[in-house]
Length: 278
View (cartoon, rainbow, N blue to C red):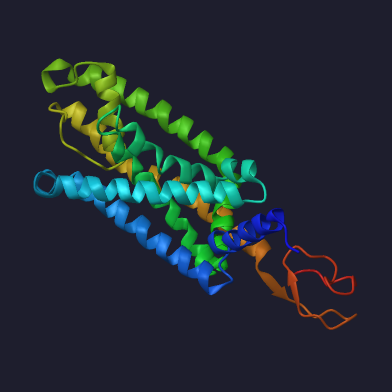
């Protein structure tokens, strides 16, 4: 005869399969409904930031936001109650994002305007990869993260060099132009150097003297090359990471297997020695 403990376990198992799984029709329907609710709540937050729309429909948008928050709060509590390891879920990426997506609405009761922070809910849309089983996209993101991690030292050196260069250029422009041209301080000159070197060019301040314009021209030309450097570093690491991830076609004399990783020295099926890369 089933006991109350068995019934409770059965309830938890059923709910867990729906809110954590996508294998069942109910689980997939739940996740799709969740994604739609997330999109609608983000749209509501964006619309509320428009003064004209807020003036006409502010009350409706506020009620909608509280409805979404209550639904997401119930969902978060259900995930905690049914997760096999609640603490592990709470500390996971999705657990933290789920919590941060509901807190701003409650905080806005004490701090008006804090509800704008719930735009973080857009991060919950990452679940679309799991819902629609787009695992290949997750694999591609892992390649990108691996490439960024491998190139971090080169990029750090590059950023330190660029930062030093902007300080020097900004100081020179301050000495050349002075306050008459709007370069009232070295930080102001550094700001101009960053804006110019990144080719943004706000135009809020600009050199007026011939030496200043010559220096500005040099910085502008350098900017194109500087922007290309980190792109080349990451691209090289992406190519290297993909090369070692994508299988190569080489015939194993032991078992005939044709697909192996690029860095494989032995057959993945029988362990025979593979011929070297050409």
